[in-house]
Length: 358
Image (cartoon, rainbow, N blue to C red; front, side, top):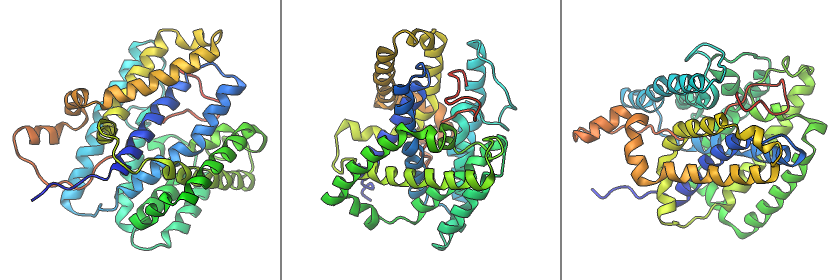
């Protein structure tokens, strides 16, 4: 049987979005200025929603069968059990303070694994009927009444509409994004979001972009906070489709092939980012903001591409997916249809942007 052909657009999209995860985390090391906060808000309006939407689109095959649940454990639970303590103690060794219970309160970038686990457990139900789309929106708006970091359940509810929408998207829907008029509209939409991001603090605040803070933590009435979350979600949805429309449809050769290394990049980039933080880079950027921002951006892209490169990926995949790597090594492959595609990471609310140590 001939191997299944990969969709180059999906691989290009996955590589772009996971690279932006690294970029967003690295920007968190740069000193706060009007310009850096503007760039940060612009990115976070849409890049987490787009990542979640694609995760939903790639989760369609999930069913409540033994093989699928086993695959879910191999690709999400096992990496979480390994990398949550690994990143935690690495940061402690660097002198950075850590709070919260290990595994119960996901630390920094590890939040996406338990959140995606819960979404995928619910996938067989979510995909049964389109009415789950408005239901997910209601769950998200009510989810703001939830406060706390246990398994980041606030984000399970807050970002659920993007995941459920991804589940209900079909290839024909995404194919329409390739229309010329859609691409032109996408450019205009991103320009508009850049304008909106310039005044984020005038009608919202950056904490809304993380979907992890309860309305009470934001010191807003539930009605006002829910309206603001709905507005932020609308901007995120528009931005997500705008960016997806601009991703190249054709194969970009070796660059496209790196889209298969999403999990490797996601799980390992934090060690690099936190290592850079320990060098004193954030303090240095206070006097060199423009240069620091440029170095952070270029460095983040380089880190993502190095981690996704085939030689590095072949080595690191043993830590990311140890069970199936062992099976492949011994030619004991089993069909495990659930794959993991993972996007951040910020402690809520006390500052406009959380401190780099968070």
